[in-house]
Image 1 (tube, rainbow, N blue to C red):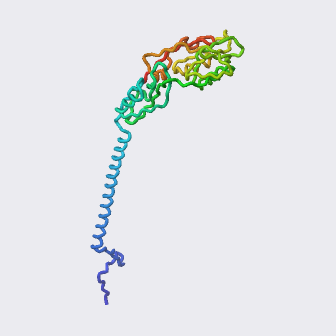
Image 2 (cartoon, one colour):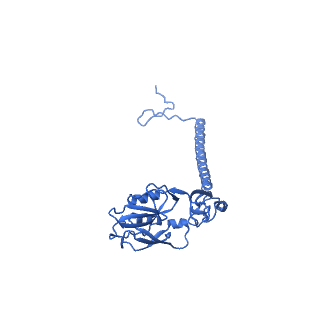
Image 3 (cartoon, one colour):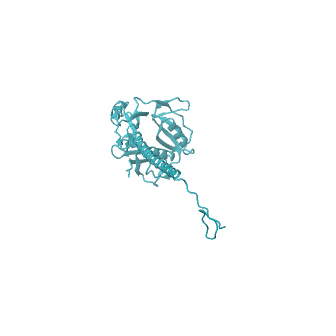
Length: 288
């Protein structure tokens, strides 16, 4: 009796080939809907993230503009020669703050007026709220003890005087084997003794009598590019005096402190004796 094959496919070699199971249509449709939902969620989240990032960058940029006051740079007014009260009134317009950080005594100026300021007027632009540090002129100069420096080397004597707030008025050289050692010191023409207790206004100048060899000649240093303070220190260390000092153009005190030598007399390398005076001309360097 012949066998009947009901719905069974034969392979080319005669074997039975199983058919892949088909997923029910309803489940397949539900799966597609779920996948599309996940995709839409990912797209929506991605767009939301980009929007939030853009918003965050905008807020940060806005805050930076507020706190740094971008684009609100202003010129610093010139406060030199006015009182602190007048300077504060002037500063209100630019919303600047005046800070008194030092005082000096300059007899040619009235007490309480501003002698120096940082930042300088017109040199740079600043933002609102910037602090301007000023030095005012004291009503009278305070007094300091005058150290006794006879017997010290010239360098040590100079250091002790500067530390006390005093300066060298003049170096007077006399023949002595103790080369560049202080033999005597004078204040206002009066010789000071070791046991003297003397006070003088801050910034007073002391004359030093120094031992040396009057026949000895040394070359003048190149002072070009030095400030007046640096000039004094350099010359005193070498046993030379500061001659005339000239500033170009009406410079205020702050500008004079920043001015630098561009001419000197005698010129560098000129042989001179101890105690010789070197004159200098100073000006503000041009900014590029």
